[in-house]
Image (cartoon, rainbow, N blue to C red; front, side):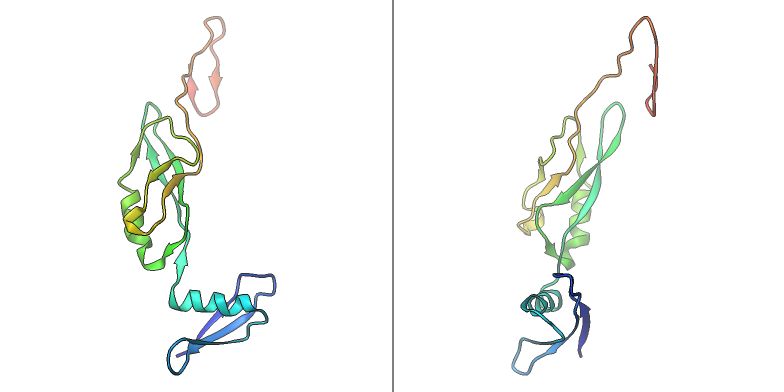
Length: 138
């Protein structure tokens, strides 16, 4: 059974057709460069994906903080990894690039924070109370 793919590795966007070759491997047609064949082999035989999501940053004003994997992982491991990430509860400060889970589920990829968050205090001057947008009155 053949699979149709669109290569995304160069601006040409070749329409590829990949099917199992006799004796193993993959036969790829439609690639206008070597990248297309490599893309089809990887996508059909060993598909991997990058992952970005959010986790809860606890504290006086709970918020979400974005995280991602530092390497692509096998596509069939995405949902188990998301379940593992959902268990994380962070407290400030969190630094950008901080490793939150090393080698998540043995995939070789780390879960890292993509945005830093430091603990801040909302202190208003005594003479002129102000209102900060989205933070409420002082």
